[in-house]
Amino acid sequence: MKVKQRLIFLMMSVQGLTWADQPPAPDEGVQRTQIRAAQLYGWRPIDSEHLLLWTGKEEVWRLAVMPPCPPLERARHITVTADRRHIKVGRDRVQIEDQECLIRELAFPDFPEHKKRPTPKKGYMATLFVESPADQKGSK
Image 1: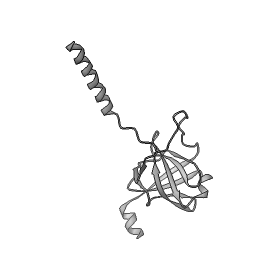
Image 2: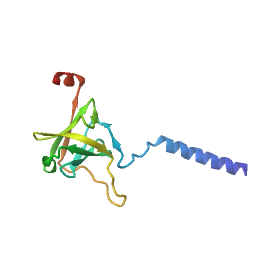
Image 3: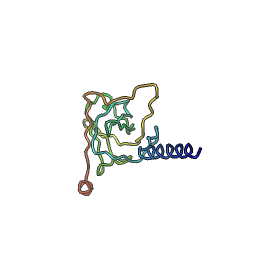
């Protein structure tokens, strides 16, 4: 009997270690004030105020911009500004052609479980423009 209890305890301990090694799953719909991005992997427009932005092959964010950016729905290339590789709400912008739209919201997108997760749209490029502290001082 004690051997069985020890085996169960050992199995539970090993399972707990496995869970501890895995990063927590992001909460869908949870908003952030900033995200870290070393590179952008693509994007997909939703409408004139929202887009999906991939900061990793499997890491996707829903961005809301203001004012509405009508060019967003027809653009194929966007530039996203970042402060030392951090995209921040209320500071950074999505640039399309000659228009800049302020990022007003960053969140994990809600995807229905029964549907396939979207991927970046083919041919749609996103460039990360990292502004350094020296750039910020010079622009003031």
